[in-house]
Length: 248
Image (cartoon, rainbow, N blue to C red; front, side, top):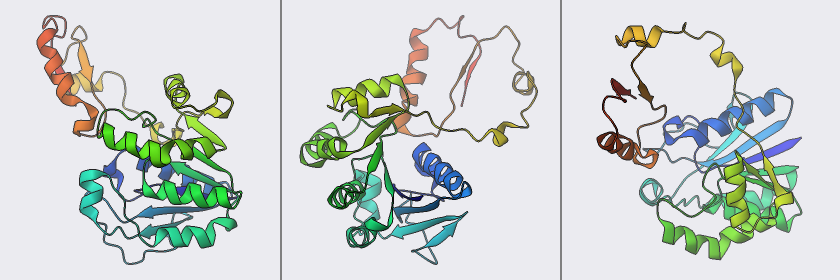
């Protein structure tokens, strides 16, 4: 099967968050299973990626196309992608693929991909990765995007993938019919967890007794994760109950 993934940022920009890592591992696994897999993305990262080659770059069996964003600042500050060569490429190449997988949907890559996929009767699926509803940041801009393109992108998708039942409910609130929603949790590479440290190593390393409570946060350090809320919440908790520490 010929599969095209559409994502604003891709490997090696893993610092951009979990979506990049999820798409990287999914596309790599699909290629290992014998599929012909391509990724259309941009060159944006925290800083613009320095690339010796932009198109048809082999990343562990996956063909990656890094389209240049006109402005990396627009991407990093306002989440606005400007990959000017991409629409023409999609228009020319979309018929070669059996299915298009769009990751997140409020970006210009999704607009072009969904438009030309629908025009050429190529099925596409949407995976919002937790960004179904227009909340948290830039709500007004997201609402405007939805009125112009977002609702249409969701409406024309063959399927939408939800990670959990909570995300399924969010799709329903956006007007997606239940029969088009599939709950597909993120995959896990079990090999990465084949050699885990023995139980108790963490407590021993930081001199934490078995009776002490722990608050554990696993994730990147970014304001979108709400770490400020977590830290501030300690003021309203019983310090004897949350006795020891917060580990990040």
